[in-house]
Amino acid sequence: MADYAFRPVTEDDLPMLARWLARPEVAVWWPGPDRQVALIRDDLGHRVTRQVIAMRDDIALGYAQSYPAHHWPALHFADLPADAVALDVFAGPDGMGQGGAWLSALGDLLLQECSTLAIDPAPENLRAIAAYRKAGFAGDDIRHDGLGRPVRVMNRLR
Image 1 (spheres, rainbow, N blue to C red):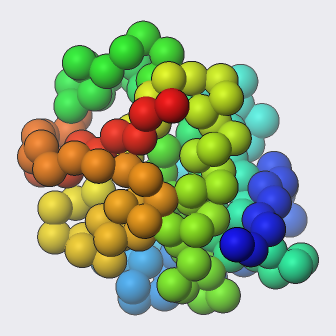
Image 2 (image 1 turned 120 degrees about the vertical axis):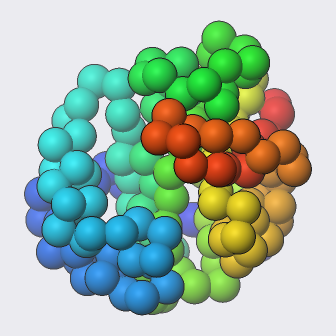
């Protein structure tokens, strides 16, 4: 299995993340690249949200942010344990096809500090769902997020 590393996102990463977010296969799920980069910038150094770049052999593969699932109102996560951590992720061009592997490695690290990981892809985002399954996530429950959008709630347990 490949070795993956995770480093904190910095201001210098924002142009790269903007390019990734502008790619059609990412923009369809993360609409408005400029708005998304502004949100990422706003969360840099945030005490609750952890933002990382997934790396392999000094090549940036993807972005992940993790945060306590109950910190912000998220009714679709209401039944999760108090220590649950939620994730939002997307791949860069060099990370396509490796999302399941690097997310599995990240999950191994995060599960040292919590009992449950949660992720909430759009039900029609089959590529992401397949990657999340490869990373050890399971779940078919469709719920509505805080904005009323349907999401598939998937969990990975310690």
